[in-house]
Image 1 (cartoon, rainbow, N blue to C red):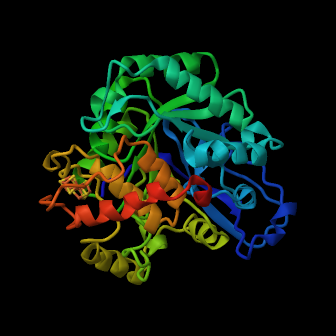
Image 2: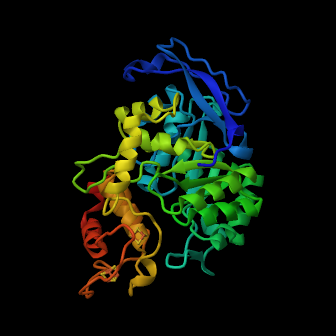
Image 3: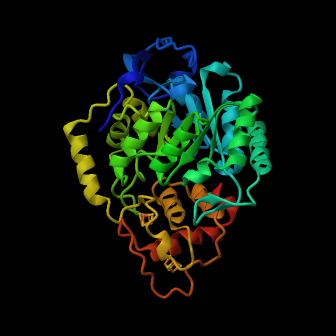
Length: 410
Ligand code: SF4
Ligand code: SF4
């Protein structure tokens, strides 16, 4: 794996090993912009060393593990994450229909503004899912309106990072109406930095963001099961050399191997694997329990893979065929006569069964313009999937979620 040492630094941290009940009294004062790598906590239970990296040209010095809040509606968990030393909280306009942003806003509102980094994501409207391109109907005004709603929900006049949510093509990254809207919002001080997020075709998106000379950050899927890893590593090098900060998501590749959740991915190993690449400045695993958070924090001191973890990752690659994780390679797109956005449907499937987050699965499906039974009247599905999925079965299974009343998914 290609690496880049320039952004690594070690900061002294208090590492909280036991549960989180006693954390309320601990005062953590990270100064994320002032370059302080020496962050002190009162009443340390164990002296340890967290690894910090600088998020490209933003200058934020972040611990290598941040929090993807999308799967959590528990303010105590977010509070505990911050108390334990996590600095960056990642949310999005659409998560839990806005309640995720509201919850985060309440948790951080009384904290020093420079003690946390707030990132949210707003999608452009009228994205042609098939081509990945924005259309003539896409409006900067709509994007700005959504972002203003996000600011209100969060209760702040600005965020630290605003991402254009979920782009897959170079043209979408460089789509001028939205790019100019983000530049304007940055000039107005409503966001300090801007970026793009991507789940698919990541190397192209990374290169486009670097070439734009406009964006500061890319939030990208990155994990040990991804296809095109060689190209991904080259693109990450290219983006980091251009000064971009890189945040990794989907590091745990679906969490479970199977729909029945009998076989769990070695999450610690998968997270370590991703963070061993020093071009990844921080990762945002989605914690939903205190145990998961403890596990995430436990990699922050040492990224060395044990022999068993190495073995688990190797075995995992063998198990990955027909697992929950869709590689988002897009090879199925041209094969479906009904132009279904299969990669996004498969992502919903992973949210429902791997992340145990049916509400997010439903939100993701609702973002598609789907008929009630999209595969109806297709007698056989001839789609050849890279991961060996029975696409029709999975679509029939996951789209049932459209029939569940929204209230049951809250
Ligand atoms: S071919 Fe399979 S792995 Fe690739 S995007 Fe489609 S569903 Fe996902
Ligand atoms: S069964 Fe569904 S996914 Fe398969 S070709 Fe038909 S519409 Fe597309």
